[in-house]
Image 1 (cartoon, rainbow, N blue to C red):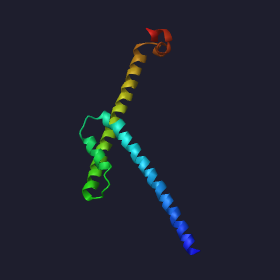
Image 2 (image 1 turned 135 degrees about the vertical axis):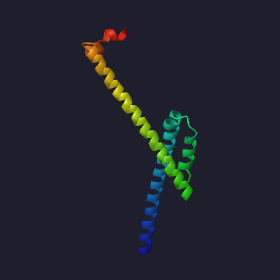
Image 3 (image 1 turned 120 degrees about the vertical axis):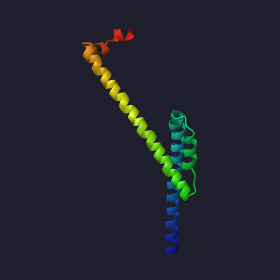
Image 4 (image 1 turned 30 degrees about the horizontal axis):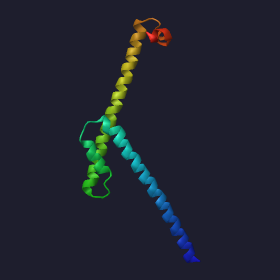
Length: 119
């Protein structure tokens, strides 16, 4: 009876590990697609190919961990640059809309007028 219990327990644990492994493999595929489709076209840099190699290498060495750290810092820098660009675009839009409202009276009514949009 104890044998059956342990056999059942270990079989269930093995199935659970297989499910976790497949979930991790799915996440890896999503990240690969993300890097290939989103990050890679936006940056014309040779470093992205190195990041792909580093991220999906399976060996755990000190050098590989340091490369992970460098690549994460590089990607965080890209993220911060993109946030800064988005913030600047938003502030430019706000400034221009305020300028238009200041210089053109009833700019909001012109903005929603369908006849003026066609022109």
